[in-house]
Length: 335
Image 1 (cartoon, helix red, strand yellow):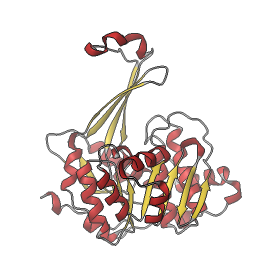
Image 2 (cartoon, rainbow, N blue to C red):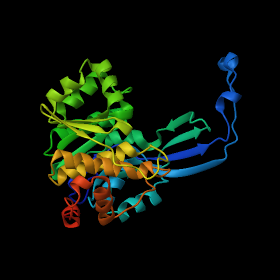
Image 3 (tube, helix red, strand yellow):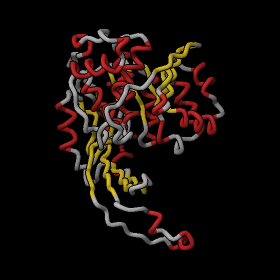
Image 4 (cartoon, rainbow, N blue to C red):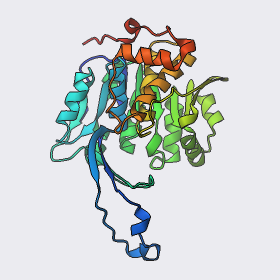
């Protein structure tokens, strides 16, 4: 029975969000040269792509992956297809508990197909695959053992079920609707915000939320303990009560692909909160974590250990150098 599946250890973080593969393709030309605007009503085009790479991805998978690198074993919850075995092995090697990741027989893991041309234009298709089965997974047991439970973008019905389950548990709810804001109703979004201890989104997504709910960023800030706003290359803000802490970005050695930066940011945010750090340190840990996927193609192609992260943090934020210590970052998980 799906509802009987429980995470078997006791990580301090539970992540319920999409688990997917990203199929990234490149076209050595311009899409516009092959699309006739006057014939758009009978569109039929074909592109010979120059490269295709399959990467592990999904909001939940990406967050759990970076938390594992940061020394924070995490319980990942979601539904996947029969093609997940290699992905699962990578996560488990990082200490991530995948006992709450349920495999659906006869189905594929959710997949995004992204074809980009030389001008950065994209044609994207998304196949949800097994993702909708996440609505049948019960995460109450895991949430009761955790300090934080993040509910991010996946099957909308599953998201709201998990919001309610976390709200009834001892864990603090991190509500991160992101890509599913267009699919969630205004009432769903309000429910998630009202139940949340922390809301995370970028500035554009907060505008989308306001359009659907009537709740401004200031309204949300009054309703939750911590409001996190990201601004891409312009950094982020952590808003606690009436106070706002502005966080700069961590310099990237190369800007290769911004995809996955937001997910890694959330991992750094959660790690800093678990360590009980001041918000200026929490935000900078999040900013540093976000930099790694930006420097690589693929959202889980970066790799580092805790000492390497600390060295990079000290380099990025010299005024805060020496405040992170390896012994404080590696978390032991009880079974």
